[in-house]
Image 1: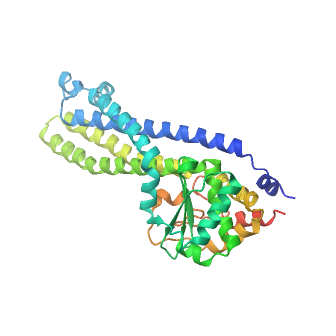
Image 2: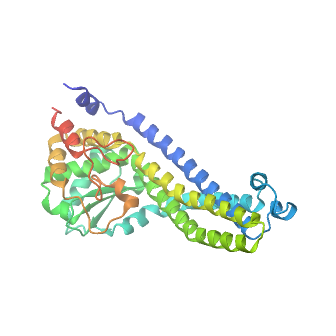
Image 3: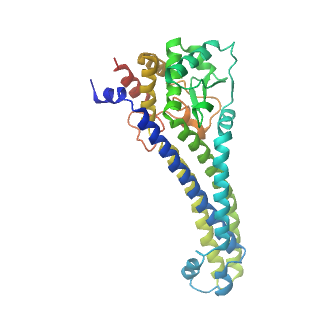
Length: 343
């Protein structure tokens, strides 16, 4: 028996849950720190743009620019903006805890699955909930011919499982059990909690970055205009430098969000596959389901912020050579191979 197979059989739920709770806490800190830095840079830049920063009042415009930039580290507006962003981040996390799940469902066009129309789906979800020892999650449907599924929920008692109509129509009962068990595994292992926080955090950082990118044009325009009016050019040069710093922050912020989203370990999918195999006692059911989903996972509505939630990424296909840094999921062929090796 291969090492991969042994690793797949050996599923440490408690360790997985503890690790994902720790990752969720670290992610919250990253979100707050990133927002704080963006707030400070915004306040600092605004104070210089308006000419109210002490460095521009007490020092002549022909003073050494590096000296002036050192003084700008003590920006009152930057500090106030940082405090504001910290408060906003905390409020965003509170909102995430209470309302993010519904928002993510709406973002993907999910609607509640009717008990009669989707009776088999409800039955399978209930069976897997009993097998996992969790409350039955809410059941949702995305009306899309693409074949895919995802789970969401910051707490097991508030979780939901969503499948596309395309998946429901083509899966046998064993395959549907495998998919639902995989999503229940994400809820059981608590990694869906981290995935939801990533989706919300990446979205907020992207919004902040877009706002900063739009305002960066003001800095460059203002800096260019004032440098022409100022015979010594000192003031305009400072504004241009500030604009460059602002622009860099606007570019780096979404990069941080991207790296955080990509940092979701691909092992979470292997672990969910292993857990699903234990819940169903039928690893071949999930393996068969994955082979049907592969190549047909794409959805009409593309949403990069939630792509990591799905059983197979709906927007990108990853090869066996894809690195952990650039992929949200392992290659489907590797997942199927591991599952088929289980006895």
